[in-house]
Length: 73
Image (tube, rainbow, N blue to C red):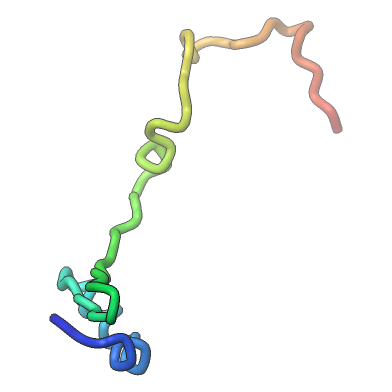
């Protein structure tokens, strides 16, 4: 769907609903065309953290010895 900036701002909820359904809304401006699409959020924590967390070593057992762990209350 193609629209201009004024109509896009006035009917934002309509265009947001269309983007959620998978449509791409093209907003024409003097300088060019902008695309408005919806991005589905990731479902799992692993998906969100992928590429940001590095796990080194084996995490199936204790990572610290009993005397090295000092919880603070």
